[in-house]
Image (tube, rainbow, N blue to C red; front, side, top):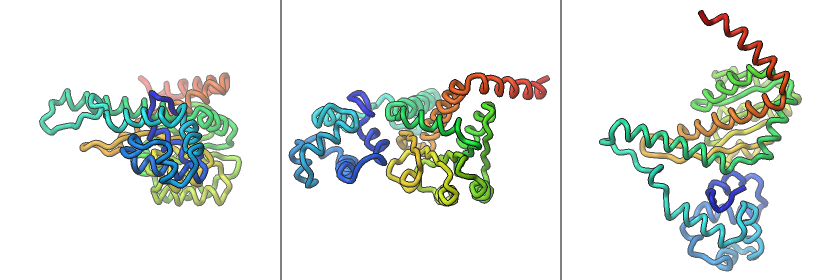
Length: 284
């Protein structure tokens, strides 16, 4: 959960799927009116939404703040004082070095923000599911497909039976062969990509456990997935948030792989040694 040094809006987005109905009402209001919230009292917010002040107070605690005032302070810092050193607009007359620095800073911020809103319990649950699964398959479309292939490339070193494919028809075919002892990791920035939702439908029909990696807590993907892991990415003039989120997605895959290898200990070490021995044939 969040604290005063983290982003209030990002914390709300990442935890949205866990909220009860009244909490979602408050969450929607804050996400849609962040500027208004910082000028409201807890009484005004409660009255406008038709909920008790205690409900608003508990919501603030639910996302990691001591109370409404602490949440407002964090929200004000986020909304009123943007981090200009990171979010500086890239201008067409910027030097190559300046553009490069701004891109790197944007990537760094994506990773830091994603780390801030990461849920350790969900990471642990995913690691356990990967280790327990008969087979793990990664699914993604467009830029997220490359992240899915990166997941395959990493986990093939673990000794775990893994797979990934880029073709959307092959993805559907592969999903149709998975069973309830398998695990599917579905990667989608928006959580609304039709190809991934089609895959998800097939997976759910086969009662396959699913993990979503996405930027949007309020999406068709997160509503159906068993576990959701979130990235945080912001759009700039020269790069969409989908491109930026790829850095966060890759970092989540890295964290899952490392945790799995540590948990598997000797099994993982042996698989890695076998892979290194095999790949040595490709070196002169």
